[in-house]
Image (cartoon, rainbow, N blue to C red):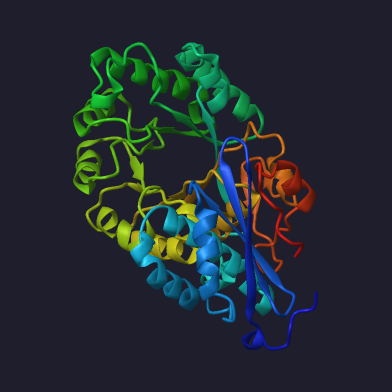
Length: 396
């Protein structure tokens, strides 16, 4: 479809969604225009995000898609009384934001990273999330602790490194027998030692071949985090992620202040306003938001700029399909303080089939020169893996 001569004369005509996924639910979003040009985005970790998107459509139809920030500002104002400042509302608008960046890039004939200020790098580094000795659902379905043995973690690390990765992340909140009561978020001494043993076993096996981070999923008190950090060699751990519950910024700030280990967080803060205090009060050593969840490309780039003012590196949380992953890669390319982007689909054998392009190679994504996101959704794959009751959106 040829690009119109004047992008200012283009209007949005429709917004459609469809949901696919296995381990995670991926809400794909497509914005249509009267010029025949479309943009595709994605929202993740937002149950019923499609309902928010359907509601928001009435405020988009007839508007010019190139003014991305104006469109999103209007949507946030319209949805604020519906909870649109946090949670699923923001996640839904994140998908629209990504679709508009794809669409505006196509209309202006520039890659999406140019809309964010241009790129600092031609490729972005990607780290592989492995969960434990097995992937998430395999380990959960196994029903025993074998996947959570320190040696099982180390064996999994070897497999990933053999595939060409140089950065990996494991979950440290393992459901082992040493946890007495997970609801009180306190670990006793043996539970602390067991997690330190996991970290030591993995990092000893990996050596200097890769960076290794550990996700804690908001599981513990600040006292537990401090005692765990005291057991770890700070030079061995890339970061500990989401160590304390996200509801209380004071806890997060205290955990970062008292821990000698690098602390990462950010996937549960929404928009730049939600991230402000953690960044300004040094509550993180690595800022870790999620593009298709926490506000979209423009909003996370604003977060990255704020973190840059405090010399805090940006690592992007990501459990998305290739659509949201490529959107995150554009943000990573455009943020000078970018560190790495997550990949969380090693056990989804059709993940790469969602788009026509082959984007991920040995822990790197090369930024495309094509307009917009530079990826094309494969309609057949979307149709095959659409969730029950979902209709596949119209062709681009």
